[in-house]
Each structure stands twice: as C-alpha cells, then as structure tokens.
Length: 166
Image (cartoon, rainbow, N blue to C red; front, side, top):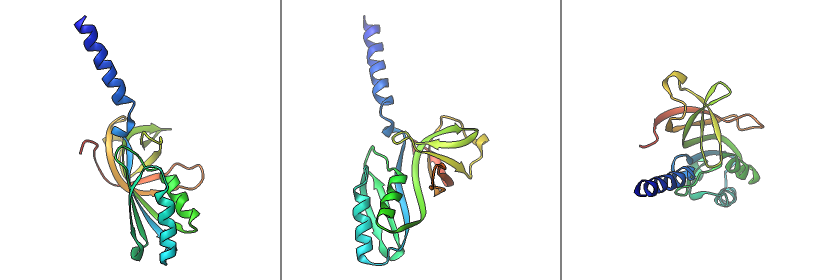
C-alpha cells in the first residue's frame, strides 16, 4: 500500500513538472535593433505594440541607439515572430535581432537545432559543432537571429552557450 501511494505521488509530480515546459525552455530576452525609430512618436508607437505581446514583462527603449530590449515574464516565453510583426505593424523595420533562449538540442532534418518548449520555436544553429552537443541536452544560448522571412526556420548564430541550470 505504501509503495503504491509513493509511486502515485512520484508519477503525479513527474507529470506536473513535464507539463510545464516554461520551467525548462523559453525565449527570455530579445534585443531588437530598429530601423526608422527616429522620433518620440515612432518610439511610443512601437513600444505600445510590443507591450501588447503575450509574455512581455519589461521593455527598455534606447531610442538614441534605435534599440529595444524586451524581457519575458517569469515562466513565459517571447514569440520572436510576433515581436518582429509588432515592429513592422508600427511601420518600422528590424535590422538585427539578438536573443537569449533556453531549450533542448534537437535533430532537425539532419541539422543541429534548438527547440524552445512554450511556442515550439525551432532555431537552426550556427557556430556550434554537432559532435560537441548531445540531442536532448538542456542549454541556454545567446546569439543573433537571421532568416525570419517566409517559411524558413530562423538561424541562430551562437555567440555563447551554457548549461541550462546556470
């Protein structure tokens, strides 16, 4: 009887933890280098559109540098495609996109990729050797994102990596 109760508790705890990908995978921060943000009205408009996006906790607008830094709410993830769309809906452009993302290494059609678990975003990785990484390993990566247009998966040019526990 005790063993059955113990196994039941272990199974319930495991299911709860596994059902919450936000504990393990998320786009935590996005830096958007904006083109065309030259006046206060432009800055206000893009800020307003970005703050409406799901998961946005904090937004820092560095208008002089034409840079906006978006941070995710605790336990949530930012959808980079929706953030870029919000900028474009403000009639501005994105010159560069840098992310801090936690996720798992996956094999994506023969290529090494990182998958975050909340929105299911997949990033093809550049700058890491497949042999150095284990599929399924949890990591935190920082890098610049390229190829957001159309149906092409975004490519993440990795600048730094660390174990996800850090």
